Image (cartoon, rainbow, N blue to C red; front, side, top):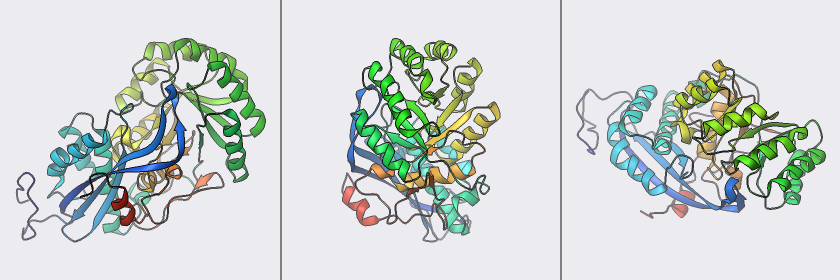
Length: 389
């Protein structure tokens, strides 16, 4: 292969050009308003979604799209930092390379930068979209084909008042949903215990219900919650404490009738294995932005399945249908999806694709067509681009 200098465009005249040679990698920061504020654990309120969209173009004129949301409190990634990570560090390692070598390029990106998993994820997703388009197959096919006929979609409830949660949950139940996630660690714990029972009564005994604290609970409130809500039939409680607080999580697991799920703590395969080894968790929440893309998320899902852990796949609140499509393809192909999938593009005021992914009858249809199977709306992309280049 002809040597490519740092930041130099790939030479179209090279006789040794690989079959799908990367010519350009573009980092596009966007900020999109949400349809309504979303409350998260610890009292955080989100009104906008900040994401990095990556466009990778090859010398034969094909291009692929990827996306990852900024998540300062989860991955440490900020939008300006993600842009710099791609432009200064990742793009030079990708330009001139064969986009079909997805595993190799994922490894090279992992060796180029510590952390910066969001930037890596956006690039990795774009590579999968590109490879699928080149080969004329879907990302699901690239990952080995379907492991299930449908995925169980999880509806997230994050309103200020329990009455709003109930109204939203009942409306979704009428649409065919049977799986709900209640945000906790936001209100006084007594109110959250009451909310769990109120929702259980409103939704009935057959509905699946879980709770997510987003690291927002104190030790006292977490113990009080699992004891008080034990009769509400919660499938799991997700990430009650900070991502490094293994000792308190283990103590809670030993006293809780509600299984615990790791989210912010499940940053990589090593952390998943460490937390499983102690017996602190019964399942994991896997996100492409935490693990660095499709390749590493699939590997983590295989490891979790081998360890006997339940798996939930999730996108960050406000990620568009670009990132959501990657997650849905994973949802149809990972070996175990016991705890469902939740995409969150419906929180956006405007999606970044022409036909946004929709959840219907408690499931999400696998996108058809080559690559991710979504068509990016470049007018919307220009409208919400932050740097306005």
